Amino acid sequence: MYLTQPLHRALQQYPDRIATVHGERARDFATHVDRVARLAAGLRSLGLAPGERVAMYALNSDRYLEHLMAVPWADAVLAPVNTRWAEPEVALALNDCEARLLVVDDAFAAAVPALRDSCPGVRHVVYAGEGPAPEGCTDYEELIAASAPVPDARRRGDALAALFYTGGTTGAPKGVMLSHANLLTSALGCLASGFLATPGGRFLHTAPMFHLGDLAHWVMQSVAGNTQVTLPGFDPAALLAAVPAHGVTDLFLVPTMLQLLLDHEDFTPEPMAGLRRLVYAASPMPRQLLDRVTALLPHLELVQAYGMTELSPAVTLLSPADHGGPHRYSAGRAAAHAEVRVVAPDGTVVPPGEVGEITCRGGHVMQGYWGRPEQTAETVRDGWLRTGDAGYLDPDGYLYVVDRIKDMIITGGENVWSGEVENALREHPAVASCAVIGVPDERYGERVHAVVVAAPGRRPTAAELDGHLRARLAGYKIPRGYDFLDELPLSGAGKVLKSRLREGHPVPAPPADPVVGP
Image (cartoon, rainbow, N blue to C red; front, side):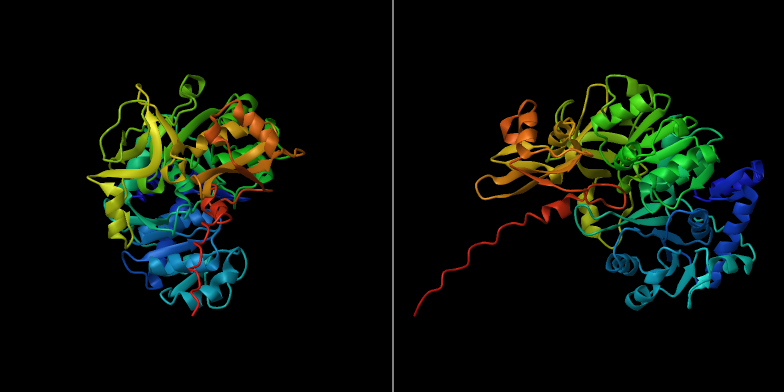
């Protein structure tokens, strides 16, 4: 199995079908394949050797899609860069993976001088923007024009395909090593469900393509031979315009993006009338938001995917049919390629309905963390990957994700799952979004603390929210304090950065030793 295989099939079976669309620029598969082969040749002319890493620091575009195919075509390894990182974080990842080539666009070209200074291993920078190439950079279009197509190296199977750096929501980012077989196992297992891609459809990339939540759809849509439309990033107004303008049938959003879309002043259901399928994943879907989507866009086929980068990424799927039944608030059942079980801390399988750690096994389990064999061994045991998520399986095999284990709050010996408190808070009409964390407490070890973003025009008080929660939760689950913010800090994938919220509540320093007099 190899990521470039769909291109050979497309060239043989439907060369005139539109492959990529970016703004007014549309290219058919014949043109797309030719540009990929020329770009691969150009990268090799810059000294790229088999297995070396090529980093892409850019917003979504048709050139990003070409790059994703050209790097494996050239027998090299993809290393997408998180576009929300600060320059020191970008440099850390580039040095960690020993990237040899860096591709940038207009949004990040200004960072090149600093990155050159801090990343001596980067030999060449390719400029993939719309204007003239900055000094010292190789122009992307000139590189393609000057290069003759080379044969596909057909890098395949267990060969490393890509390094995806985790978002750092629970610590320093780690490079997740995924092979061609990993990514295609997940894609084919999802496509086997029959409800992840519209045959002959058009998929819109508006979530960041550096994140595997969106990039997994690039793999699936490539296998399906569908047209892929790109927006530079998530923008509600641009999305509402792009869906009807380009005949988009399929869309992926994380719940945070979905809420921003529905809350946007220009949102109406009409531009979304031609959209057939909405896939959501990457973070928990609030029940109230799911109900709202169903009410506003009843024609959509909704699909939930649960997974993580280390699992290439999909584990379970909730079908459109299940969205109308008793399991609509679950994360679905194991996809065709995945085996799922829930275990106790000692590794024994817990009975249905009992909360434990979600683990997974299959051909989609990562090869490991780049340069971190100890952490790999801690995470993957006997082929089972420990997700760090707490959840339970019901008797029908539906998975319910409760919380991140690290986000569980232990207050006075009682376990509090932050997701349960967040769901209750979101039921209050004055709460637009929220996050619940544990903060240090001298008496109870930890205490429950809520961070709230108010709904437009509302100013909820702590007392008001307390009264709302006491009718729904046990007393020890009620937050002992509240912070009110204009917005929550988010990772590039749209996940709430709870680690950053906890920084405002550091562990108190121990008392200083008494000064002993003479």
